[in-house]
Amino acid sequence: MYAIIRTGGKQFRAEPGKTIKVPSLKVEVGESVTFEDVLLTSTDDGLKLGEPTVPGVTVTGEVVEQGKDKKIIVFKWKRRKNYRRKQGHRQKYTAVRIDEIQA
Image (cartoon, rainbow, N blue to C red):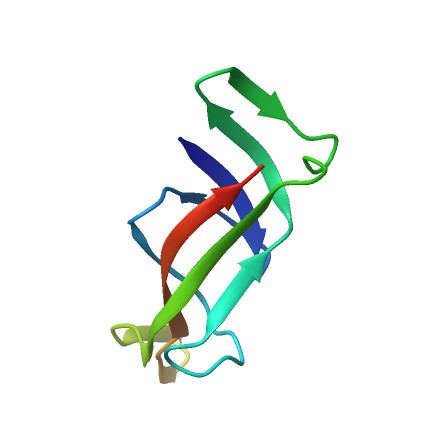
């Protein structure tokens, strides 16, 4: 059983017991979080596709960690113009362990 959820403008595959990294949520570590924006669910009965979301299905999970990803380097340059800009970025994330998919 799995579900495709949308959070932070991105889509993630959620399965019970798995941990997913979603864009930063304002939730403390140890608290429960509920995703109601479910786009697709797969069960023993078959596949349910939402238009745009599947009604009555929620995905709940527990926040395991708040952190930052690896640093990426943003480097802009123009040849022969002596133009160089170097900037680093670390994206914040929330690690959520999926507990259950309620249909």
